[in-house]
Amino acid sequence: MYGNTFMTAEEAKQMDQTQDNPQKLIAFEARIERGEKIEPGDWMPVDYRKQLIRMIEQHAHSEIVGALPEGTWITRSPGFKRKLALIAKVQDEIGHGQLLYSACETLGKTREEMLDDLLSGKSKYSNVFNYPAKTWADMAVIGFLVDGAAIVNQVINSKGSYGPYCRALERICFEESFHLKQGHDNFVFLATGTNVQREMVQEALNRWYIPLLHFFGPSDKTSVHSEKLMKWKIKLATNDDMRNQFLDQYVPKIREVGLTLPDEKLKKNLETNKWEFSDPDWDEFYRVVNGDGPCNKERLEVRRFAEEQGRWVRQALVNPQDKYVTPFA
Ligand code: BYC
Image 1 (tube, rainbow, N blue to C red):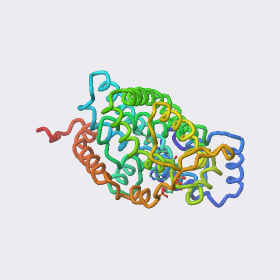
Image 2 (tube, rainbow, N blue to C red):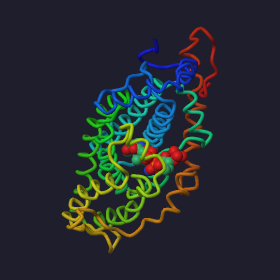
Image 3 (cartoon, rainbow, N blue to C red):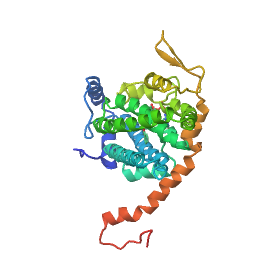
Image 4 (cartoon, rainbow, N blue to C red):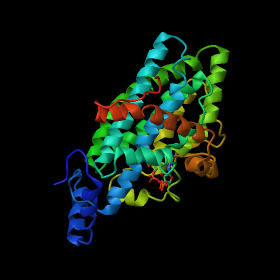
């Protein structure tokens, strides 16, 4: 019997040794077809587990690294209420990371292994967090549009087949809805404010447009994992479908406040119901997700610093009787 909260690497290995049983695979796929949730102790194909680990782990890292660009604006927030809302949001994002690391631990990879893979650069995290947050308007664009994009993706994936991931996503979506409201309020405030505020938010929007299109992953023609993920209902919409849903929901809201998006080709084709846009430089996407974006180095350095500085706390929790040298001694 596998634990309900996590699976050890040894238990996962034992399960992997039962893979040559075609009956198990048929029964597993029939459960997915019926819309049942797969739970940690249930039999699953090796590749189902591997794909889930890859995706949930990347998602967890994205939440933790994603808190960094916004975190840099806490001390510079314009006013007490904006500061409170931003502190609460950043704290929530870290909490989402914790929920997702726990969901991923149910599959046989420990939190320590995941964090090691993040810090060594082996694991990916979302492209969008490798861009700088240059002005306060970036907080509006991240809160409104990055969170908006994340909600599109997460609401869809929360209907998926793996129980622990779906339950984590449901909770995350509730909190993201609050983030979206604070982002929208900030966005509209700047867009309808002074000329300087309006120019600032337009400038931020121009910088975030391409990273936002990239956020949903490569086009369906080049996506590597979509077919398998869709078959096993880990993903319930393709990258292009999610991107289209995002444009459908958010382009009108951006235009409604008189702002523009920096792409003359961006328009909805009413016959196909699909948005058309200029191809968003996929070379840039691969450079950024493979470690060579404007802020990749800085983001990982901050995480390494946090890991070092917090080591004594983690050790003290395990062995409270020992003496520790804190970084503040
Ligand atoms: N960034 O075969 P494909 C948040 C990689 S945090 C980086 O289409 P798949 C927030 C992909 O991993 C929410 N890499 O992949 C937090 C694969 O490489 P590997 C973040 C990307 O999995 C704080 C390769 O490209 N959301 O909102 O079928 C503050 C080929 O792609 C990206 C999630 O993490 C990317 N954008 O589909 C504020 C969502 N896209 O692994 C806000 C969870 C693709 O073979 N993830 N790649 O080396 C997913 O839903 C799916 O993984 C994706 C990609 C739709 C992103």
